[in-house]
Image (cartoon, rainbow, N blue to C red; front, side, top):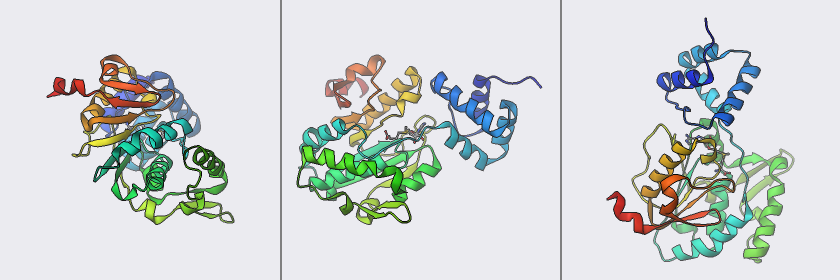
Length: 280
Ligand SMILES: C[S@@+](CC[C@H](N)C(=O)[O-])C[C@H]1O[C@@H](n2cnc3c(N)ncnc32)[C@H](O)[C@@H]1O
């Protein structure tokens, strides 16, 4: 049998499974697939045959294809900006609707909740968090992480708070730490708040009816080709309230016509409501 190409593999995968990676950027997806081939010892035809016959295998494939790296308070300056400029403006609202699209294992979600708590706004938090990958969504829900690997983020938290709120609660107020069993776990008053769901930004409709004040989609679009990035950002635009903000990663930006639909401030993109009527 002739070996199929990467492109053919992804096209067939999108026809025969719920997942469509065809418009992921070529370099990144080819590297991931190459690694899967090396580690599994299967060629692309064999991978496809297995994926179409075995639903669990497809989920493992999604886990191997996606990059799930994340951190607590990743890029301190964006959290400083949110705490100082974005969140206080929402204080008079009854509910603050936040969506973490591509939340991975949830560290970004807990970073956001901690800042809202430090502003006495946690009771207003209406937070949804989604990811394409089953496993990371489960970890995010539990809010439990290996301690040794994450201990450095206590310093990050302390550094950030020394700048924005020197009398903030200590890190241990938010996480139970058990060094012996190498675990740290977000306290229940944090894990109880978000609604975590498995959702594929590319292949599924936007899952929520409400509009959002803040949409985090950090370090996710970077894996998509420019056309797909525009398509997804266009949907975020519709899902934001006027003056709502979209937060991207430090190596990301807006492409194409959606660029003019937002006002950029560092990694924070505020919906430009003059475009409101365009989509009515
Ligand atoms: C590098 S992580 C970023 C996590 C977090 N937002 C951050 O910046 O720390 C990228 C996440 O996007 C998710 N992802 C990739 N493609 C997706 C898609 N089509 N729909 C939803 N999530 C996706 C991956 O599973 C992964 O957890």
